[in-house]
Amino acid sequence: MISIQALTFHYQRPIFENFDLQIETGETWAILGPSGCGKSTLLALLAGLKLPTGGAIQINGQRLTRPRPQTGLILQDYGLLPWATVHENVELGLKLRSFYGADGIHAPRSVIAVKETDSWLERLGLTSLAHHYPAQLSGGQRQRTAIARTLVLQPDLLLMDEPFSSLDAPTRASLQTLTLELAAEQGLTLILVTHAIEEAALLGSKILLLNEPPNRTASILPNPGAALPGHRESPAYQALCRILREKMDKDRVTATF
Ligand code: ADP
Ligand code: MG
Image 1: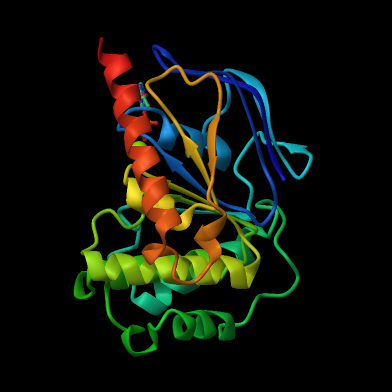
Image 2: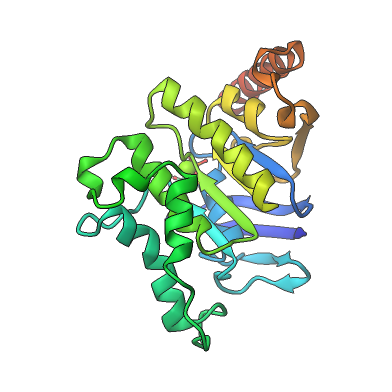
């Protein structure tokens, strides 16, 4: 469980103030809001890459003071190493872990087999591309490599920051479906940042709507249909998109005047 307690975070101006939020293990959340509202900041705080100015974030009862090895982070630009093949990119995390250990400090006694890499390449449909370099891949293939590289480390929490926004529509749709499948299959807690209303309504069983900073209270919309097949075509999905559109427009108008 993730517990955000009275979180305050400032740059030059406050982004979060006394902000509370609970995320249960295994839930799928979308964080939605206009550009500049603090989505990436919240993700960086959840990743332990930024520390709160005030308040605390606890994950499974432990206060977050630095990045956890069990948290996977996937960004929009994939973060692949250009000089390494698909196979080497996916294997990299395991190699680093065998050097530093699962706790990030102590190297483990046994090194995880390369078998893990191969099975994740297969799960993500990358086997035939294993010896290609990132420059030889499409955007969708790069993002699948980035996902394989993260999941090979068996995270319990997966954070994604606008991971599909630079992909074409069919590739985006297939990766959205794959991400939901993988999260369910691996029992992951998934938190995905997006500025796209449709993506939030499609993926998030719960949607956290952020506004113009400072964010003080969590506006949460439940979306239980997100996990069900056919959600994209359902009236509930259409209705939720409409509500989100209205809420985002309203917030923008009140923020502007
Ligand atoms: P989002 O991801 O929702 O677009 P961010 O979390 O990146 O928004 O940023 C929230 C606000 O904080 C924005 O106004 C942005 O300009 C500001 N900001 C982001 N990073 C920094 C930084 N390193 N230093 C100062 N201000 C920042
Ligand atoms: Mg952002």
